[in-house]
Amino acid sequence: MQGAALSSTSWTTGGPVGPRCLAFLRRVRAGGAVYKLLRNADCEALDKALASGFVAWAVRSCDDVRLTARGAEYLDRLARVE
Image (tube, rainbow, N blue to C red):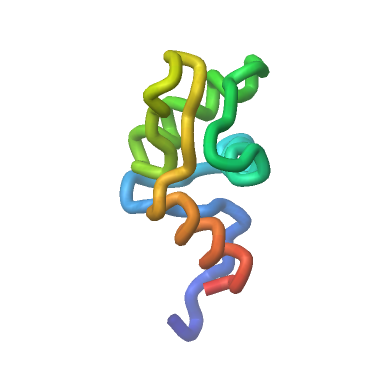
């Protein structure tokens, strides 16, 4: 990728994820096995994270999500700047 322009926007196969979704994914990871949706910002980022396959609904309730393996891998790749 020599000569490629650097962008501050994170991308998935579906398009840009954005900083709000990245912050949401980090909160889900920090929440452990299950993260309870509490903030308005969570609801705004949830659709993009679900569409990307980075989170999935947990079976406990309709307010709980969990980070998928794909979501964990994506965050790890960002941390390594790949």
